[in-house]
Image (cartoon, rainbow, N blue to C red; front, side, top):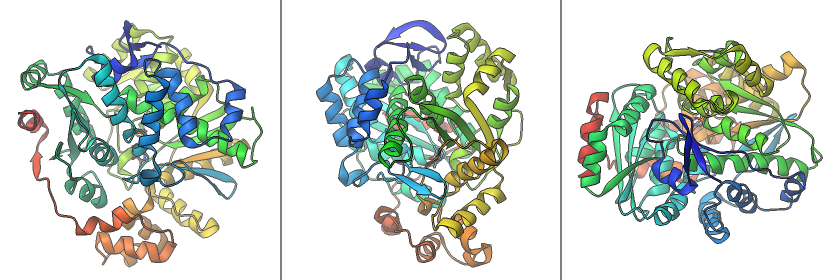
Length: 496
Ligand SMILES: *Cc1c(COP(=O)(O)O)cnc(C)c1O
């Protein structure tokens, strides 16, 4: 299996090359040249398998330049019991829906599903490609990716990580997680600006030839651990298969029956993995793209115009406060019939005018598989309260957006297909917001962040993860800060 770029379909690189590079030289994203099939029989036999076995099957279809033994080692190390507990991606039943919990990894957000394995894929890729430099991973984060990348790559031989986060755009727990990060190869910098400023800044660093030359002189090669990296996307496909296999195992569906997935979406990586799973043969009914008040994707999926010329809102689900959803480019590449010229023109328009419009035919293809919706801040809070009241189940603010949109979708369509809501974070990463939803603002107002989390534990009874409880005891280790223009200088200093 070889990989093309969304902006150069003539390219053909191996998965190891795609993973080491992160982003293609002309600015496009690496995509597989096709979608390998997983047969119904194979899906059926996954019901009796462990998560690591399921993941290995999916990875092996795309990472054909890795041996079975290499992939086995990667999944076993990444999803080990010490890191994820006994089930890395448990499927819970909540009322008439199912919730796929993807936050049992070390940083308690779904990013761990990919970022715990990416370093192992990367180390193998470095060896396979004969890369003789240190791979310097630069990351822009809306909160969860940064911590997950730091934790995944910390002290991994041959790599180093630099994380930029929007100073006022992440939750206090997320900020504390990053600023207290340990490890000899990690850097963290607060950027004055929002996530889009930060992400655009990092993309600019990747496109900067002088920085690449500077790093080269210093024995380093830049790469990405954002969801633009193929190695981030491919492990995420596995949990869609896993959820389906668990639905069979738990007796909710029989093999071949369709399932809907509702995904709280920001950069479109998670839901895109669901689309790839479907293209590989997973029986998926609808993929429902759930947004918060930054509902640019709702408008796009409804009308075909992607327009970033709009207000940016800071919400209680910061990892979804995104106006430029990078992975949409990969979907559009497929929907346009792999037309790299068209993709270049849309992405150029996005850069110059902040918007592009896809033709009716592309929109129709998009709507064949995707539905969409959004939840206001009040609706998301109400969903947390209602779900807890009805089922004793506590949602984090991101999952609450997905849950609210799933209920809207069922009400408006009457669709009775089994629904899996993809759950992306532990409620304790957003303790104040969840406590406000359950007990009211007046209750939470006098409490500091850590007391909020303690109070939440008393109220909802879900055990708080130990690493989040211990956060308050850790010293701040990182103090770098800059404005978006200063990001280059910071990267050079890190790369010395
Ligand atoms: C990253 C993130 C999302 C958005 O996922 P995308 O792949 O960017 O669409 C949603 N919820 C949480 C908690 C996240 O960390």
